[in-house]
Image 1 (cartoon, rainbow, N blue to C red):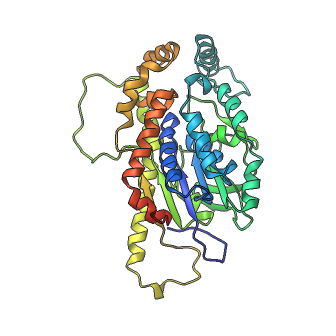
Image 2: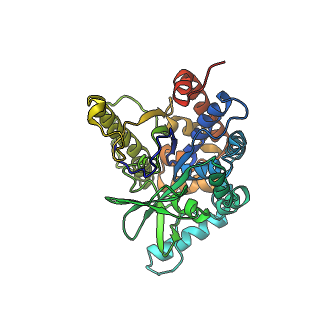
Image 3: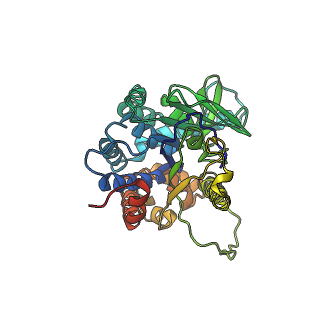
Length: 384
């Protein structure tokens, strides 16, 4: 894998990759809880490089803020995700939904322009929640203490089409520019999290430095790239897609897909496919490098490295789990989704309800503990 690390010293740095997926990101919390439970009680943050996209950006930022106290960070994430309600993320009452939908129709159907970005759902409650739980100034404290090497939050620029990794980290990390993606140093704020998690059409774009940005998963063809550019040589990647065996035979339907079904399919494509493709590329590079004798690879090479990988993803289809919990969503939201002909695929991204989130946390925990031996080896944990 090609990457740029300007640090001369050879240091093992594990990068944690947290992908997007709306409410599905609760699964990541379960995986992280399992890791916290396997580490010795007062262990430091095992992931000096944190990279988050969309809902994964919020989890990454929380880990960065509390990096000196890894177990506390995980406890806070479990508490928030395990007690979620939809109305903590977006206005879910009839008045709130009708207001945002009226603004959306006014701007997009009637053609009335506005400087304020509009969308189908109003995320004002999420801004208040994040402001309460995340003191962003502590990110730099984590870096200064050595508990964190770097944090990146990826968002998509609507004007340029570029995928931009906004990062805050050690001074040795330098900006990068590649085809359609780049890394920009900054001070991470709430605006970066809101931009990265702005699911297209559903949530409003966020203005950053004069441009509007949306969900980081949209143009992120190489989700592992920010971690590698910031100096990671090991990658722990948490997906939110059940990796079922590929089958060319699909169930056929008579009826044309509804708007909601199309939206669910689009979101699956945005959130779930890129990480799998990027992993395939990394594994191909690793296999190629394994065939090259070490003497032919420059010892001071900073452009190509073999990267150790560990990928954990759901052992169950999250669509099926979401189907059991959709009735827990507020009636106003269910009527809104019914009017769109929404499928459980779309619901799984918006199902910020504690029963669904707790089941995903439990699944992430059990999936990780099932692979405990692999995790021990990858993390360098000594079995007691």
